[in-house]
Image (cartoon, rainbow, N blue to C red; front, side, top):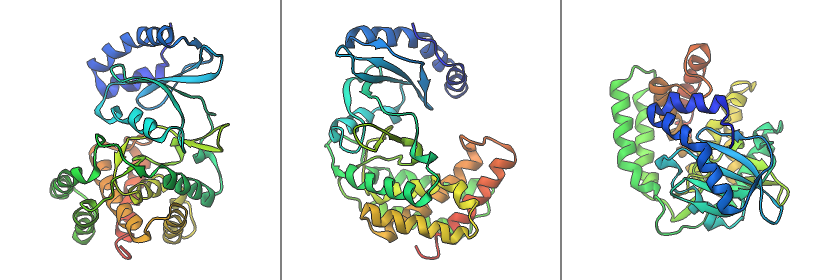
Amino acid sequence: MIEVPETFARSTVEREGATGTAWLTELPGIVEELMQRWGCAPDGEVMHGGVGVIVPVRRPDRSAAVMKVSFPHPGNVHEPDAFDAWGGRGAVLMHARDDERYAMLLERVRASTLAEVEDGDEVVKVAGRLNRRLAVPAPPDLPRLREQTDAWEEQLRTDAEELSHALSRRTVDAAVTTVREVGRDQPDLLIHGDLHGRNILRAEREPWLAVDPKGYVGDPAYDGGILLKSRALSIVEADDPLKAVHRIMDVFAEAAEVDRERVQRWAQFHAVQAAFWARRNGFRMARGGPLLDMLTEFVDHLAELLVERA
């Protein structure tokens, strides 16, 4: 039986309550059952992400793989569908899946991530090139981002009215306009949906491969906005934050071969969403205190800056 990492168990209970506690009790048995079914043997220390454990294993042919078992959540449903559609093209290979258990047997890659690369341009170029490769015609049953636009607009307006914030009316209206004009007009392409440096890992088969996709269907430029938001700390530390912001968008748009203006509009939308989310929930890296205050102030400023050329 595996030993569930303490930090993962604690965060799962804090987030999911009694349901999380019950699932954690079952988790070692789930992993053991899947080990037997897929003919795998443990091959290293159990790791974890935000919502799932990663168990290094050896397959029956002795090849290296990992078993990923996630907490049952709607956001995890279409991850195996995305891997299936890509077939290892720009992302890790999926060897087996058990949708009822929210489990997959995946190609093993290295633990080092693109986020650890010091050259900021290289981080953005690699992400952009992967973004281009992952943008393939989408299977019919995956969630379309354009179907979320009404909910996005309603939430933006609710947050603007209910929360105390420093965003100008113009800035909030720009995000709403993006939802209406760009959000409702998206191609039928499979995208990662959460593309940032920590979800791109070094590998043997290719230099870099994507993990943890959401399996959304929509505009590849959407992920450029997510990537920009994930670069927040590097932007804060830059001598000229505005120049750094535009550099990221320029490099990503060129590498991904997407429209630069759409990247900026999605980035502005994501920044406004993040500003409101911070006030309701905090961020994973900061639930409170001075760091949260700094990050909230930054995304406020970023959302305002991105209106200028949107």
